[in-house]
Image 1: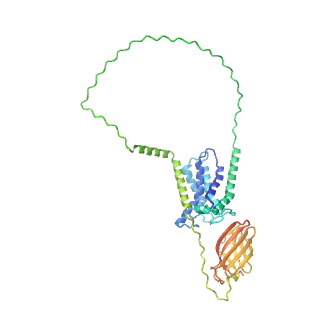
Image 2: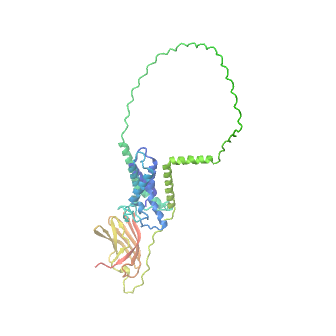
Image 3: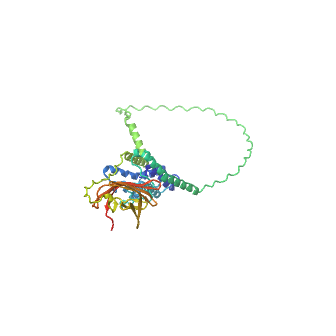
Length: 421
């Protein structure tokens, strides 16, 4: 898998194609969350889910169907009426590309079993022909080492720089193509003419106040009503409850949450995803699969030849692929060589360096237009075996390109086959 920062940076290049004025920021944030969400499938390791299963790592969560379904659910929940200048279909397309980019970057790495793009309809795993990215560790402790720094620098070269360059190019082109506003030319200012002098009017004399009138006599006082015999006592004022302020605060809080329901749900989902991500990040890395080596076979009678001197060829347990070439055969006698198969053809390459003893084998073979392949291992059985299904050699295979970068490295068991007649 590529690192989480690289997945987020890759969404910047996608967001440049959808940039519009007045688009809310939380849409870009949701795209970054969906870009790293597929790696939550590592939780299955704690429940016994194997790497190659449908729900394993790089399985169903990395498929195109999962990206389409999850994006549609997010649009129905939060962006049913669109986001700013983007319609709902455009929002779905943006979120789909962000989540699908995770599997595309994982298919550029050198390790793992590939990406199940078409799960659950097909369990086949896929890689791109050229894989320049190294596998990033799942644990934060392992990532914060010199190896993690080297992986991040490599990703900056192959992902960060192209993504930032593509985003800058698209945004500059869109700003250049945007129609410019034509502003009207300012009219020449005309000097105002001087206003004529204002002559104040002559003051008028105020009229004399009228003579005071006599005030009317006050009305006679009304008689007081007779007292009632059975008047009810006055009701006491209502006492304020001590929980009234808390109830008012609760009602105001609920009203505010109901008005901002969409933001509350978005914040809750974000906190949940981040919490799960932190929980997964601090989990210990899954143990590497151990190669089980069979015990040596019993010593054969002296007349039988040694396994190191037996003619024939050896078939690997796993036929890996490097630069569209599949490793199919290893030959020790009479001349050490390796064989790769392509579509309709087979290519055999000799070994420029070979050290074969009764217990160990060391080969260094040059592959045309690929690099160098080294094989370091030992014979599982000292005496030549007659079983066609028993491992005869256990070795570590390493393929490096011309720049010294490791293209493939793994331990494998070889099965001996008699020479073809």
